[in-house]
Structures are given as structure tokens and as C-alpha cells.
Length: 249
Image (cartoon, rainbow, N blue to C red; front, side, top):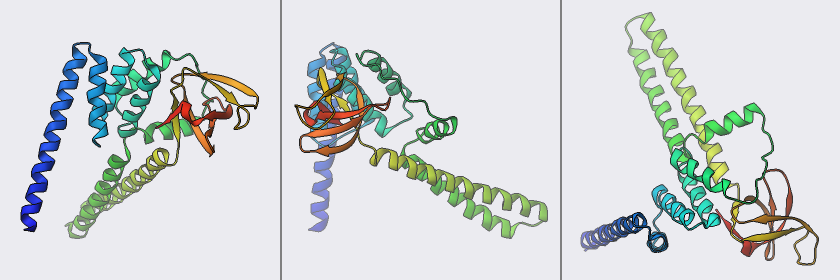
């Protein structure tokens, strides 16, 4: 009976994946024909069914960009980069979309060490760094075993050195895996979907307007208060904005 249930589950799963694949192909065809709204509807239907991928988010971003809806376009490009930070096509299209925003926020300068570490960290996603770490440790174990069975001192020194280098590589990769994980899961970012939003000094409509933002701007979410979010821009400015104007990544 259990085997029968498992078989039925696998059949249903295969059918579901087949349907999603067909829907994705149809959406791509509509996109190619310039039917961007219809393509977006199909792409979002796949998302609503719990499926996600870099290609899906990338195509959604492209569709919204074609419709000149910059906020959703940037949002989905950012979602794609969260899955694969090293994807150059997504990164390039994101830059094009960001150039179309009204607000050109000047990023606070970073030190060369911090900038280099961030660049290396974003080379791979969390999963890839974790697998590289496992690979490094596995190579260490194999080489260390070979070191003990090596026939002469030259081979022993070679295997001993390379085994420890492999371990160091594995530990470094593990460090980058945790850093990437923390960047993705402990940092809250959002994209402004409202055409224009007045950023307040306090979480209330009657408070002072400190600056104004426009659709597509990316902000860091610092805290919440009822229907408000406290945000920070890349240039360090801080203020409060109604939650409804943002969509968190």
C-alpha cells in the first residue's frame, strides 16, 4: 500500500512539473511575441504554485521592464540575484533598470578590504560555498591518508602540504558560506513600488517630511512600527515609510 501511495505521489509530482514546464514555455512564447502582460500572468501563475528559479525571476523582470514598470522589474531582478549572485545577465539588466529610476542614490564608499570580501562572497551562493567547503575537507582526508601510505619523504611532504592547503581552502569556503547565508537571511531589503513616497521623520502622517523617494529605489528595512517601516538608503539617510509602499525581497 505504501509503495502504491509513493508511486501515485511521484506520478502527480511529475505531472505538476510537466505542467509548470509547459506554462513556462508558453509564457516565453508570449514574451517573444511582445505579449508581455500575458507572459507575466503565466510567469506569476508558476510562482503562485510554489515554483521559483533564476530564469523565472529574470523573465519576470524583463517583462515588467518592457512595460516600463521599473519597481517590479528591479524587484524580480533582485530576487534572481538572491538565488544566484554570480549571474551576469541578471546583474547587467538590473543596472539598466536602476538607471531608469528617478532617485540616483550615491552609495557610501567602502574600504578596499570590505569591498573585496563582499565581491568574493557574492561570487557564489550559499549552497555552492558549502559544497566547496565539503570538497576541500574531503580532499584533505584523502590526501592525508595518501600521505601516510606514501613511499618516500618527498611524496610525504608533498601530500602533507597539499592536504593542509585543502583543509584551509575548505575552512575559508565555509566562512564565505556563513557570510553569504547571513547576508541573505539577516539583511532585510525592499523595493519601493509606489510612484512617489514622502519619507517621514517619525512613523506618523503628521510628522515632518525628510525626503522623497520614487518607484524602484532599493532600501534597507531597519525596524517596524504598526503600519510603518524604518528604512535606510545606500547613502545613509534614514526615515519612515508606510509598509504598503514597499515590497520586501
